[in-house]
Each structure stands twice: as C-alpha cells, then as structure tokens.
Length: 635
Image 1 (cartoon, helix red, strand yellow):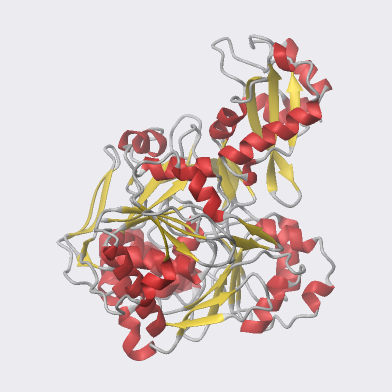
Image 2 (cartoon, helix red, strand yellow; image 1 turned 90 degrees about the vertical axis):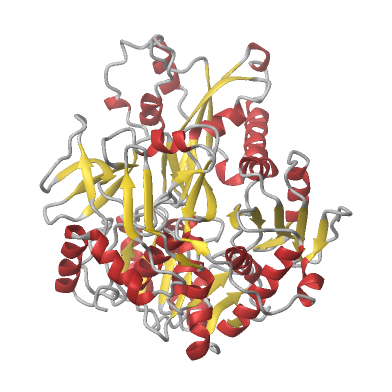
C-alpha cells in the first residue's frame, strides 16, 4: 500500500528505486491494489520503441467510469464529486455528489446510445466549463465511445479540422458560453464549422446562456428534454485495457494538429497515482485545478485523476479577473480549497494587481499550490509562495505534456525540497535522460541537454490518430529507444531537473503549445502576404508571445501597415483562435534563409529577443544583407 501514497523522502527514494529496477512489478502492484477490474491482465507490459508499440495490462477488462464513480457509491455516495463555480459569482455554486454524478452520467450515456453512438464512435465535445462537460466525457467512457474535446476558444476552422480528422459522428455543444462579462456564440461557431464536415449526424445542445440560436431540423436537439426521459441506469461497456479512451489534439511543428490517442487502463492507473502523490490528496480535501477540460490538464487532473481517487474536484467556468482580480482568492476562501493548481500566466497577471485583492481573503485552508503549462519564473514563484501560500504551502512546479498523459517530473509537497524554477525529481516509474548534440546520453549532474524518457510509463499516448508514422517520426526517431519530449532541460548538482524550453518549432504562450506552422499557413493565405515566419519572445505575463516577420507581395507593399496587421490577426483568429494572435508584426523585405531555402528562425528568434550580439555566423546565408535591415526595423 505504501507504493501508492508516498509520505516522506526516504520512502520516495525507495519507491523510485523499485520502480526503475522492476517497473512491471511496481505498476502491477499498484494496479492490483487500487483499482476495480472485470478481468485481470495477462501481461503487465509489452513494448518496442522502434515500431513504436506500447501495451500496458494487456488482456485486462474494465471500465474507467466504474473506477471513477461506481466503486465510491457504497461508502461515499453523498460526498461531493464535482463542485461547480459559475462565471457569475451571483449564481449559486452547484455541488454534485457521487450518487448524482452516477445518475447524470448514466442518463447522458443512455442519450448517446439513443442517438446511435456505439463503442468506438468518436464524439466531439465543444462546451464551456460547465458540469455537462465533465459529465459528457464520462458518458462517452461509460459506453466505450471515444471523446475528442475541443477547447471552446478555438475557431470554427480549427474545430472542423479536428472533427474531420477523427470522423466524429456527433458534436455536443451549448447555445453559448460566458467569459467574464462577455457571452460567446458557441453554437454559431459549431454551425459554421459543420458546413465543412460530412461525418457529423447529430448535435446535442446544452442550454447555458439562453441566447437565440438556429437549430437545424433533423440534426440539432436540445439536450435537457432527452435527458429528462433517460434512465438513470446504464450498464458500463466492458473495455479492453488498450481500447482508446479519448483523442486530444495538440499543436505540432507542422500544420496539421496531432490527435494524441490515450487508452484506458494505463491512463487511469497513472493519472490516479500521480494525482494522489503530487497533490498529497487526503479524503476530506477540496481540490481545485483552474485549467479548462479542453486541455490535457483538465482531462487528467479535473476529471479522471481526482475522481478515480474519490476526490472533490472543483470546476470553474470564469476567468481570474472577473468580476475583479480577487476571484481566485475569493473562491479559495469560500470553498476552503486545500490544493490549488493553476498556470504561471495567471499568477503573473494577478501579481501585478493590488495586494488588497489577496490579503482580504482567508487562504489558510491551502495545503498545496501547483503550477502547470510552462516552467514558472522565479519572481512569480516567490510571489505565489509568499502571498498565496504564506510560505507554508509547498509549490509543485509540474512538468508533463499532452503526450505523456500525466505529470512526469514534480516535487512531492512536504517531501521534496523545492527550488524556484525547478521541476525537481521524476515521479516513480519515470526514467529521464539528457541527450547531447552527439546523440549520446549525458550522465552525471550539472549537465544540460535534450530531455528524453528511456522507458514507457502507463499513460504515454499510444499513437497519433490515423497517422502512426507521424507518431514514430515525431517522438521516437530522434534517439534510439527513447521518447523525445521536444524540451531541453538541465540537471543540477543534486539531480534536480529544470526545464529550459522547447527545442522545436512549438512556442508555449500562456501555457498553451502553439505550433508555428499552422499560424504561418493561416497568415500566408492573406492575398498581400508572400511568406512569414513566427518566433516566440519573452513576455512578463504570458511567458512568451508571438512575433511575426512577414514579407509582402508587391501588391501589398503600398498598403497601410496597421490595417494589414489587423487583417492578419483576424485571419489567425478565424483559422486557429484568438490565443494564437501575434503581439508584434514586422514587415520585412526578405527573411534570412539557408542556401537550400530554409528560413533561419534561430536568427529571427534572437532578433525578436533583442540578442543581436550573438547571431553567430550569417555569412553562409543566401541573403545575409536582409538581417541588418530586419534588425534596424525591429519593433
């Protein structure tokens, strides 16, 4: 049992050594003791990173909702499972018990079945952060349908791309959503997106804003009336361990988003185990992750990880600055939150506001603080530690990815000594390696390199939907027998890891991975644009923001540059979403290129970051003269 909930540092090192020495035995004991199985596995692990092929608990039968809901009913049916805090603080919070969650998930699952959704069908979910979002995930899992959640800030084009890639049969959406003082027409975005989709047969609509919307006969239906007629009993579909649970799209360094496929058993075991340890969750704690379920953080650490542990998990519909910048701290006081997990972007934004927003609230219930999405900078770490945690609530600076499914490197609160900006030590079962420029692993401490993982863990994504070759090429081709994370890292004198940032063409903005290629593709559709290159540069609040270097066609050279900037950002907003808009747009006569025609983004990155003294040798460029001009015109 001690394997499951680590309580002190010596135990961590003992458990970690065991997990590395005999990973199969380690995960087998955890799976056996802490989860409900319809049939036990035949083999714990089969793997080959060359193919790549990874199978955990092969032969086992289960349903993840029986582990997240049913097994808690006898002892904890009246315990709050989901605590929903609406956008408007004047609207009452909702407390959904495990018993109520069971009934609502079963009703929703029966609605899905009545609409012809079967095991293996893909269902696209495009909803705001309301209870129906979590319930719809669980309803899909109940009947073996594969859910694909699309963040409800993405454009109709981005939504359509994801629907088409996985041939979704159904879309679940709402009439609209609230974001602070604004109402957003979600249904209109869906309608626009579906003009480019042929696979969708039905659309279920949740009533949230009561906005006037258009309903398409034969395709669209309001959800609530069908739910009201549905039975609260629904037998769980028995799934194989390696059956897909969900697809979640993430940005890559090429234009097409990657549909990462997570399967059932290994994902369940790892997210539950990592949640319990990273947050040191205890039975009466109230846990709050501020992420959106449209991202992996929400899947793993709002829904599946907490519910598999019988936790109370908070869902928040709003934004940290509405109706004022004390909203986070007010909610912590109101619900006596014990674990608070948020993004460095939010911390940096709130740190710039008046301290009265924080000090007027009682934050004494807090036991653990967490950060996610990007490494937290030292200034924000100290502000968070001093003013929110009052120097008594340890900060867990968690490193992980959509592809990893769960937290990989993180302090364990009250166990691992923390250092600002360091993710510290790997979780049990995780074997990191730093790789040098020669492709060889760098041993020892006080070193840095590209971060890889040497051995599979249960929640690793198994493939990219419909494109296993791309999965192999992206993650397993760079270094033999290793998963390449795309991040750089350093290991200090005691073995702590610090993530130093992306080493590929992916930029993290406000904690969200944005591939440069799809943004450039969108920009290049503007009739006045000849070509473009996007790089990231530091920003006090968002961590990084986007800088666009854009060359115009002759027809665009006489155009008003301010109008062009607005039009370019409008195109980005329509194709991807407003999160991908450029902060700076510099028009250039040309872009620095190698003789083979490749744009040298490394040089542009340094110019954007105002690091012109360290550009390196540019004499080998095809057009070195353009660099001086770009520097001279830098915004």
